[in-house]
Length: 205
Image (cartoon, rainbow, N blue to C red; front, side, top):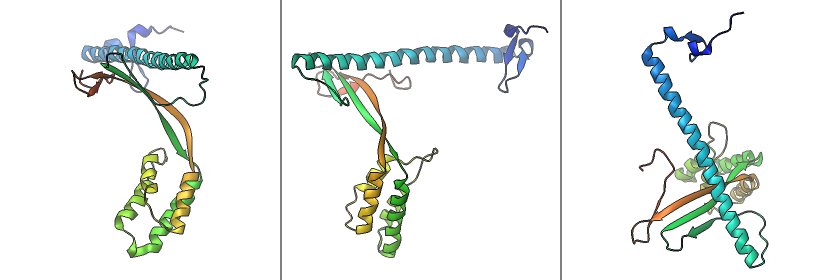
């Protein structure tokens, strides 16, 4: 069986091997340019990930050193934290955001909320009907949005069934995981305002 020289072929979008001699020079150049950029981005992504991990470790080590000074034992979940340089020119913000998921009780809550709206009929505020429907819209993966649900929970409606619905939705909420973020800021001149040092390549640098 004849060995295929991969250097003499290119793979198209359908996974077929196409002889390079049959591929236009412009298409080959475009392919080469795209792959160089992709490779550069992947390497940069690895560097940024390492930067975040090491920065998180640096903050944790600082906390441990200070805790040791005061003979305090740190445990449990790490919290949000803001650190300033001695000259106040820079600040580093570590924050955590919980990923909220909903269990089967959310369906019961949705049914109760919608029952309330139906029972109140014409007496229900149209905005309330919209808010209830909006709160239980799901994304493409079928997940509810915690921020939409919170908007519904903030309503102060003293109705027995409404209160049962609120309890059901709160019982359905669970923290799936907590994701850590780190942001770095630089003070703008001699003002009290700070601007972020962006790592987003799409941001103005």
